[in-house]
Length: 114
Image (cartoon, rainbow, N blue to C red):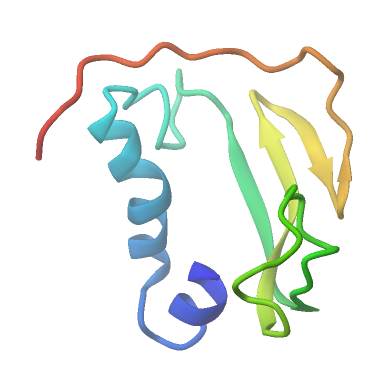
């Protein structure tokens, strides 16, 4: 939604999207620079978005236990098509392809007030 309604509509730049969804939370929770940046020594975790992919939101499509979605019926433009975690593809065009148990708990540092 941030990409579709924010970046595509000119309300956010791509840099602001990255800051809001990755860099700032990683810093806030004491996980930066291991998380929230693409750099040597950081975890290689990122999502790849197809900026032209159109998808009508329905609760059945969302991976949630809820039977409704607040965006039900909205057509989103720009959708995640691949997710890479620590250099391995874990989600590919709607399919979870990660091996069970492949996740890793990352302990966070102290809460960092802005």
